[in-house]
Length: 225
Image 1 (spheres, rainbow, N blue to C red):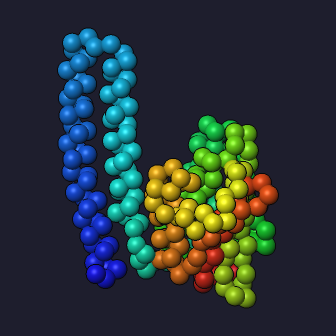
Image 2 (image 1 turned 135 degrees about the horizontal axis):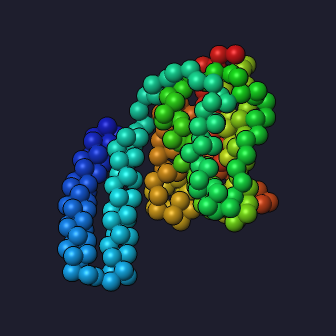
């Protein structure tokens, strides 16, 4: 079976899973309405609310997978580096505040005024996924650093995301991007991020350090200075 055929099969399976999910969501809503009329207690109603939220979460995961499972060729558009990184910061701000984690941008080697020619939506999703993961695994009160370095000579951009979590064992570094890995807590975020980066012809790696881990994304880009 070819890679393309596997992609089609995976997409078909995702669609099949969404059908019963939609049915479950409808029946949970109907059940909640009936129980409210019958004066059900708050604990039972809360359980139904949690069920509905979990169904919605799984549905969003599948939607994300259907949109970004690839890799596919990136549709590139020029975007200011600082604008893209600002969009990432905005997306992770609420989760970081809830976790008590500080997220900062350290633009080492780039002033942010360069234009990176990338698939803006897809790359934003990839950076958000890696940054959100860093926020989730960092210790409360910790710090997540986003670094960006532009190398005009080699036409490459390097983005690093450093978390404040326990260092990953070197033997496990390659498995953090696999769906269902302990590191990603069952989310598809890191898996999808890797696919998006591959779609840009780039690479993503993780390296443990003394305190935390550094995720490095390298992309061969057409850079407008």
